Length: 419
View 1 (cartoon, rainbow, N blue to C red):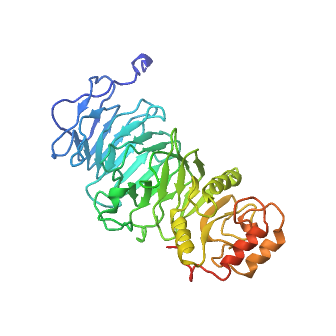
View 2: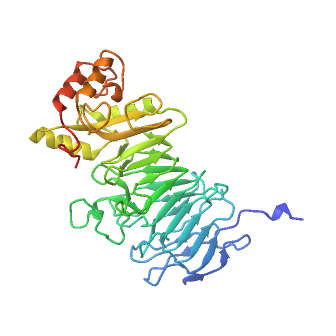
View 3: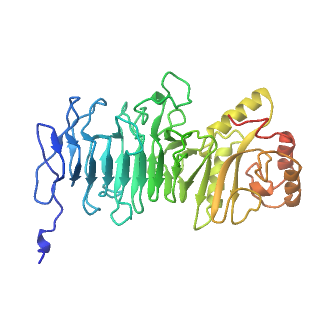
């Protein structure tokens, strides 16, 4: 018979003074006691070095702040936590060249790391928050020190019931530890100017909470290799929630991916925060239609067609509008289509699609033509959304929308590319 009095939360595990070479072990199991594990300040591999399977239970690793060495070096398979829900471990700076599974921590007491990165590039590098069937959830919070690198060129899986918290604490390079030349930003090394999670893809079936970043140094969620045929040519996919501004403001940017479609199950943009979709489409697969809320985010960012306000915006569209004002030509905007209420656009049932669109393109077919004018005429004077002819986000289809159509008539995505 199991003595329930013996089932207690284990104390943080302690190893002192030297690197721990771990393999096929459980570290910090019930009854092991101690204080904390100091991080290794040399380049020899870290406070914990694993080449095979190891389980860490409420381990606290601390001390190292350098970016050229690690507190944990994993080339095997680390599991953090046994049954979920316990107060979170402190992992420090983690180099993960294998698989890392976080199945402990809660939103109030997450497993924390200053970085989760890698020394090699490959699809076998995986970070899972929560186990795959959702029975043991976890919560991982990544909060880098200024100047550190965060992200892995592998896969992040945020499984059902689990949470990834991304917190920016300053101007830093986040991701792209090995510069693969994929960045299109200007500068000697564009990663110097961004807080970046540079991934093959993030699969999110849980929650991603974000804090920090600005328009000049956004927290960038980017697919490192969007042109590769890896089956995940988007920045973010799955039916989980994305929260922009968790407790304080955030500026989150999706990497430019050649008009691919990222997907979420729910989107919250809190006051003072911004989600910048750049040239991406964003599809929300919903149970309860969020259109009125999403339109309020778009209306806040619209800012007299300049797309420079807070909310749901596109810096790529804003740059194109600025260019068109200076040089003439067609003007882009951001449109949307609700698969349950609209008939002209790309959305399917229970899906809301937000996408860069030419101003006046009511049917979202990438040109501004007489069929679009017909849609406006049918709805003139009525309350309406984008696919009914309301392009200026004032909620009513009016002669102002006819003016927008007229200014953009005969422009297409071919003669007016979004760049």
